[in-house]
Image (cartoon, rainbow, N blue to C red; front, side, top):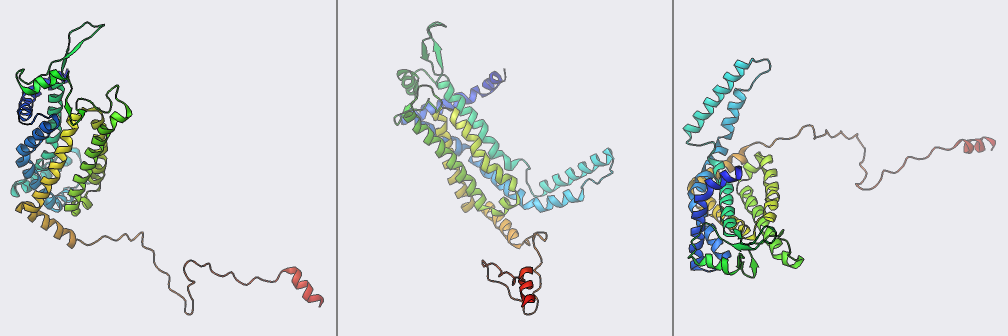
Length: 332
C-alpha cells in the first residue's frame, strides 16, 4: 500500500526522468552515458539549492557559540515544574528564532542538500525499474516474460533498444540491469559490478574527507558527525549491492560531480569563503583545553640523585650476607 502511494506520487517524476534519459540516448545511444548525462542534468538543476544550503550550513556554524549561550541561559534546573520548563523552552525557542531571522539563516537550510539526495535516488531507481518492466505472455506454470518498458514512448530509440535486447541494458560489455545479486552470474562475471560498488564507496569517502579537510573546525566540534560520515558509505554499500548497476552509475557520477562542486564552491563563492575564514580564525584563537586529570605532577629530584638511563634496568641493591655465612665468620 505504501509502495503504491509512493509510486503514484513519483509517477510524474518517473516520466520526466525517463523522457530526459530517452533524449540523451537519442544523442548518444549508450545506456551508461545516457544515465551519466541525466545525472549531470539533475545535479545542475539542484545546484542553486545545494549552494544556498552550503551557505546556510556555514552561517549556522558561525552562530554556534551564540546558540550555545542561549542553551546555557535557558538551561532547565532541577526542581522546576512542568509549566516552568515549558515556558523556559518557549522563551529559548523564541530567542533562537530571532537570532536566525536577524542573520537570515534557516535552521533546516543546511540539511536540504543532503535530504534531496534520497528522493532523487528513489526517482531514478523507479525510472530504471520502469524501463526493466516485463509482462507475462505465458501461463503461471510456464511464464514467458516479455519486456514492456514504462514511462517512455514506444517510438523512441531507447524503447526499441530495450525490446531488441530482451530487457537488457547493454553498455561497455555489461548489462546494467544486473547487479551482484543477479542469479546465474559467475564469480568472474560479478567482478565488474563489485568494482563499481567499491568505486562508489571510495568516492563517498573522498567527498566527506574533502568536507572535513576544508572545515576542520566544524569536524573537531562535532565528533558524532565524523563517525556518521565514516559509517554512511558502508550503509550505502548495502544499497549498492541490491540495486541494478544502472543506478550505481548515478551514484558514481553524482559523487564525482559533488567533489568538483565542493571544490568550486569553497574556492570561488565569496560568501562561503568569508564564512570559512571566520570559522578558521575562531578555531585558531580558541584556547586549547588541557586535561588536568591526565597530567601527573613530576616528583622533584633529590640532591645528588641520578636517573638511570631509559631502557636499562636499575642495578639491584647489594645482597646482604646469609645466616650460614655469618656462622662461618664466628667460627673463625
